Length: 253
Image (cartoon, rainbow, N blue to C red):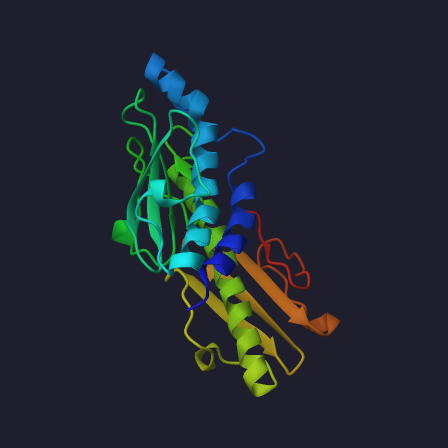
């Protein structure tokens, strides 16, 4: 199993972009209907920041204890914003889940999860019952509908899978002197079951791969590294965008 810090650093790089839409057109944002909801909306950014900061605090705790903290109070390098309550609902040696709430705004929350947490144990927000992919913060009233949620999920899951493949390929090459043509020859690594990854080319000095996601028909992400011939550089399926060495490139989702 790959270390969580490696996977999470990748997930975080995609999260920031995925959760900052250029425009709110096409999204459904619920109107503010009361003081408690207005307070919650005003604090939503702080709640999201607290949950993102929790990722690094948990990784520091794991490095010292080989187990994620079951209580935010045990994280000496972490403190939530005043008024924000952080509850860690699930924690093990492999993963954790957390929820952020405001005492004066019942029925609204932000959630996050990390690690190989079973689908049934991943947290959902109190009001809209949403959960985003690993290491992404989902909040009630953040403007994301189910459709846009799955769009961001597709890119996040495909990116995570390709980065997992990258790690496995480097390990394989260190042992065998070449990259693997067959994913089955690599050490087991985890990605969402909705993702399919195809290794397109592999040699002693380079490899390339393409990922697809079941709910994002026709959209793909590609990754390659090494001394790849120009003709072998992969392109995404929908936008026909060429891959960039060591970078995950995706169709717009």
